[in-house]
Length: 545
Image (cartoon, rainbow, N blue to C red; front, side):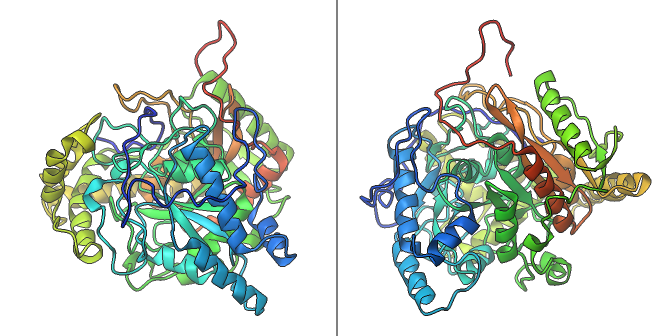
């Protein structure tokens, strides 16, 4: 199978999750008021749409404390998941978050501020290890109760920067790699995540909860992970900014893997400036991840300093035109007009760039190897040591783990040989050549481009537990397979459903892509917050989105 990078349709059925030391979602309801009304068309949450800079200013001026922010966001999550629209986007609140925030408040009073993220609550995806009282499960019941021995690099860097890890977000179980017929945003531990722009639509995945959390103002920012589209697609479909960094800019140590050739973590936020601030904190060299050896040399000192409202002037952009619906194409045409108005030089069109065949095979080879390495190092207390063990667990727990779709991708991966297998070596070489030297690099060299653009996604498809994910269109594959950076920013709406604009380019060009995305964001002002409608309102006689 090809790793699905977009869409997803799943139902609002949720199976109870379990938490370490308690029952289902035991830590979610702190008894704090302040979540605000979240009925359709009405949202009085006082932190709604606030940026990291605005939260920081609020703490500096004494309007907020970090602890109060934790209380307000916790109540918001309770209002959105436990009552109201029931988004199903957060698996658990960190039971230590309030205490951590209080300690950070004490540091601020003592004039020891760690940086721009000091006291800022951030949600992270439940495949990022934390050595605390939260779970790290990839949404699977197989890892419930297994305590990682230490924080993942990303979690540690966030804590060092002064961020409060507020909780863990729901996701497509096993990052959407268990089955070719799965439904994005569903996990056995957390049930179904729903799209805040239409509750009967899918939020895409696999970073479903992170995308929804950022969109719905359930946190200041969220962290997602991507193998192929798992940051970009839910960001585009949920109307937020997503950054899929160059593979090697952000360490994968402590992140439950799919495939080391493509895996990475990145920010999912409401603004480009917030994404740049979070990327500052999590990027860097980690001795535990050989891919990051060049990260400290290649990264920008401060990505936020590159942001310029006039950053499109003189930029040379290649326009890719993948096949989308006429309505999505119309929104893309409006975005292209904005780019031209802001001074970009467009090469339109750029010939389509094939990604090559065999990506699904490559991911299966690497998953078998990488998941067993993870289990050995990061799940020492688990009796499950191999992919075969996970498959057997799912069969034993089929009523809870496989009520809607199976594990044929797991089973196919289990039949793969080692990473020395000639088939694997040849596939990897072919894919990298097709997407790098013969792909993005050649397109940029031949046309003297700074970056490429494309629509990030088609509008979200309806939830469908019976049929599973249905194809809709996405532009994540080229940057994902090459390991090159990709930024999506809100571009507009089709019948109220968000679609994003993608900027991607050469390795280590995150700074340039953020600059371009910021300039577009400031000119287009496309993002609007969700209103949690039950469904999409389409005029009578209208065609489907």
